[in-house]
Length: 250
Image (cartoon, one colour):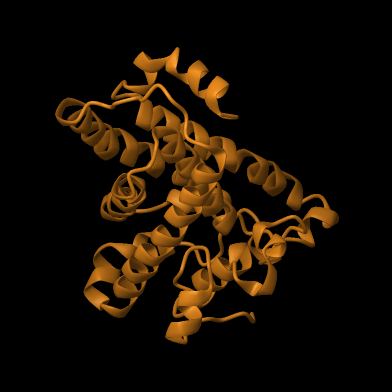
């Protein structure tokens, strides 16, 4: 059991893992940690041509205010996610099993969770673009900026934050996954979301590591923010291919 020592370490902090504060602190900590490298790149982009060459929209450097984006993220977490976390803690206390999951099962289930979340998000996203009332009322906030940067990943209204958060939280539960699998899925999901919005087409980006154009990545999602009527899936490209909404050219 390769994961057992790590899981035993986490069990030693069970009171923290089961706390109603943990989901909010964990989510914000992971999110900001994932954003930090790209914020550093943004700080360098205006001064360094080597960094700017990887910017998807070079003229947009600094267009999204980090302070404004961060303020909305904190607002949503404190006023909406935290109360729901307390309610969940009260109604359904967290159960932590003694045994860690086998590594192959953990990795396979994280991949399946990503596939399911990708489908849920694609359907939700397409609906909010095709129904004008839904777009104006809920999704338009996320399209305030036509170019992406890391902190715009969670620049969303309360409805979008909660609905996508519900997809992310319920998917591993529906599959009956181990809590450690859920934690890894949340980390990977947050990282990929930030990378999608980072605004850089870097040589080591995920979409360059996945063959055959099966993963969209930052370029895929930046085109969505630029053109709005294409590339609705957050990560993979197969649903956009099937729906005829895939766009690859600026």
